Structure formats: C-alpha cells, structure tokens
Image 1: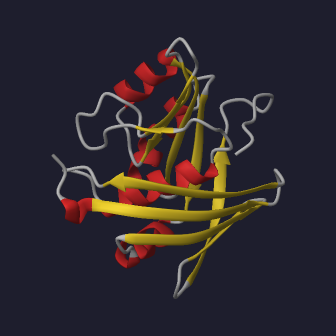
Image 2: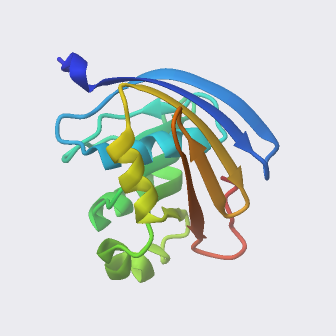
Image 3: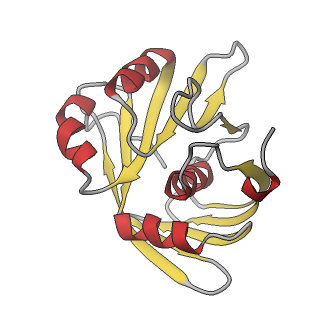
Length: 184
C-alpha cells in the first residue's frame, strides 16, 4: 500500500507549439518506494510531452519490469516504452525488443550518457530526450503534493511554470537515424 504522503495530484496545461497540441491533464500519481523526486519529475514531463491518448504509468523504482510510462495497443504490445533517468543497457535492449518506440527522458551531460550514447544510438527504435540537469534538480526541489504546471514546448525549448516560478531548458533530441525522427 502506498503512503499518502507519496501521492501527488497533478494538473498540467500543455502547449506544444510545433505540434499545435494544447491539452489539459489531470491525474494522480504515486512516488515509488525507491524512486527519487528527480525521477518522478522526469516521468511527469515525459507523460506530458507524449502526444498520445491512453498513456499508462508503470510501477517505478529499481527492479521495475514495466516502463515508467507506456502506450499499449489492443493486444498488449507496447507502442511506446518510456523510461526516465538512467536505465541499464539490459533494460534498454529488452525494451527495444518489446516496443515499437523506446523513449528515454534523461539529463544532458550525465556520465550515463557519456558511457552509453554510442551504444544507445545503435538501436533503431531508441530515442533520447535530454534536459538540462538544473531544470530537473530545481523542479524536484520545488515540487509540492498538488502539482500545477504549465508546460510549453517550442522547438528545442521547454518552458515550465508552477504557481511561483518559471523554469526553462533546452531539449536535446538524439535519434538513432536521421530518417526516423519522433514527433515529441
């Protein structure tokens, strides 16, 4: 059973200028037992940025076998497998075999990225979406139990405001091949 102190009520207004997508999301999410606030922040941003209906949150934390966020088709095949943070290469390999598209939301300049970027780009269906680490750190430090964000994606810029502050970050998208770009 989840501790009530780890439950977050979330409202996100989304404006994706590139996709002409304007949406309002309302949901409740639990912080996993071994999950950090930074990881949850990346899960929330990933959930908001993926322009799909029927998004599902998986169980988060170390040892989770499900993706952090997913879209499945009617026969339980993963259309999108989304992980936040720094998944192991064995997890990425598993995801690449089970899903049409694997999206990893992480931070630029991490040692994980330095160690695995070349290997990650060998997978034809793995896409990286990277934020500045300061954005994730600030949001994790400021997050409240009632999350009320406005998120704007305009090209390679992400703007996010809560009730008191405005945060901004570059978005770096790394694609395995130039002919297979994701629209997120």
